Each structure stands twice: as structure tokens, then as C-alpha cells.
Length: 138
Image (tube, rainbow, N blue to C red):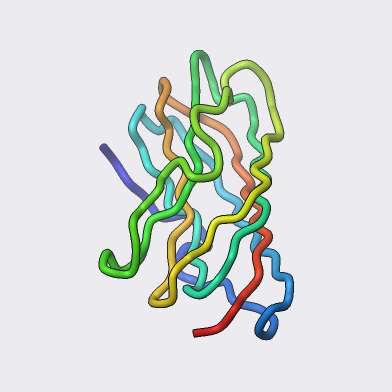
């Protein structure tokens, strides 16, 4: 399984004060990436609650599906969930917008990286992930 960093991966997204609503936008593209490729889109701080994740994708190719979730930057901070927000969404039929609405608490610590995993055929096309969250502090 291949992995690569998105263009904004090295920037830790952190805005606002304790309890305030925040939005992080991660934008990248798959470019002929093989099945199993994990795109590491960006990082968020620990001590947050994620309330909504909107994923906008291009038509990425035949029989293409995608998972969107997170992995902890430090394994002892918590348990990874690479399909926490969206599991097996169809990105091969047409451009689409998919949304997760709920609550996912991210433990205190070094934070998480938002990941998109190509679980179908080879993928080509843009992906935009918009994460709405509240920062609680550590």
C-alpha cells in the first residue's frame, strides 16, 4: 500500500480559542494512484471534537470507492479509524459531495492526520475535505 502527503500536510490546522467552532479545509488530488493508496491530507490538533466532515470529489474512475477517516500522529494517544467519517463512498460514477454529521472526539496529545484511502481501482481526480470541529484545549 502506497502513501503520500497532501500539499498542506505539514501545516497543523489550529484556529480559534477553547470551545470555538473551527473549520479546516484540505484540498489535493489523486493522480493515477493505485488501489490501496492512502492520501495524508493534513493534521489537526489533539483535544478536539469533530462535528461535520464534507467530502467533495471528482469522478475518479471506474469502480472507484474511497474511505475518509483519521490516524493518530502518536500511536499511544488513541486508536486510528481510517473510515471514521465515510466508508466506501462511490467516487467512480460522477462527481459527488458526501457528508458525515456526528461527533468524533480526538484525544489530547499530538493530534491526528486526516486520511483518504483509495480502496477501489486506480484513482484520478480532486478531493476536498472540509472538517468542522471545536477545540477544547489540552
